[in-house]
Amino acid sequence: MSNSIDPIELSRDLIRCQSVTPADGGALSVLEKTLSSLGFTCHRLSFSAENTPDVDNLYARYGSGAPNFCFAGHTDVVPVGDEGGWAIPPFEGRIEGDRLYGRGASDMKTAVAAFAVASQRFLAERGDSFTGSISFLITGDEEGPAINGTKKVLEWLTKQGEKLDACIVGEPTNPEQLGDMIKIGRRGSLVVDLSVRGVQGHSAYPHLADNPVTKLVKMLHVLDNTPLDNGNDHFQATTLAITTVDVDNPATNVTPAKAFARFNVRFNDEHTSESIIAWVKKTCDAISTDYDISVHITGESFLTPPGPLSDILSQAVKKSTGRTPELSTTGGTSDARFIKDYCPVAEFGMSGQTMHKTDENVPLADIKALTDIYQTVLEEYFKNP
Image (cartoon, rainbow, N blue to C red; front, side, top):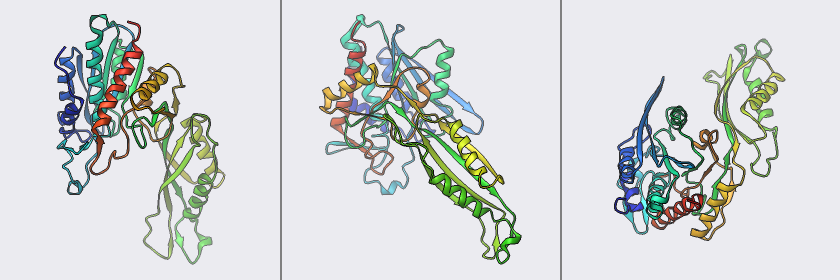
């Protein structure tokens, strides 16, 4: 086994890579070099699709036996915005006081580094007695369209005969401080583009026209004011958020021929994307059939019921932080939505206080604590050699 790796220094090395999605910026090479030195077999996987950028990914595995415990994450980051607004350059990886600054510090290069170091420590302890497998599934496409990333790596694994038995995704799940929250599921999400047709006319003679704005407003009113459920034990209530309404009509004396709106539905496991779409159509049909819709489905809702994986993770979090984490399904989507079709999955990483923000940063103590948490998870998961 190679010399001990410092999770903070590995985090800094990753942050210094300008891996703004879909660019890799050398981040996967940094991780691949580290994991190779620990005895992992690494596969660099590049995938393509029409009208999307090519994306590099990494799958690395130590061991060949079962069970295979996987850490999934991403090395791509969101754009920095106005770099002049950063007090500390976003890709410097600077330590200031007791915190590490840089794009990806929270989301989620430090989690990737922490699990790599946790793996090294665990393997050093276990030695030749370890008969299972530890793997990394790391994409460069989580912050992008998520087409050429985790989903395609999982398909590749299936073709290779690889099986994942459990997975932790290192997303920054903690709202305030490390130990707050574990994600055991996510709401589904879909975006609806609603275009309503009408007949253009003079605004002084509305009876001679068919104003699509009126119909659209009625549709949106009903859609926005109809509760779909009250939530349940694991999920909050389904929500609908109107994100834009556009008519593109500069004239003050003309009613338009069309009107457009877009809205996002975040739905719990009492619904499917199919049932949500059917409800939207039924609601609109009751007002007018002169419309078209197109739907983009980001993911279905899912839940990994509380059980062995969340129990081990919760115990590890409490051991390191003294906090009992909430098991939650709140927030947006993550690549766990793809992994849930292959094995039990839970998400736990850094605090999300500064993710995607200017001067993104995390406490140095949290990097060390997260490494300890991940190491404990591996020790408990593989308790019986």
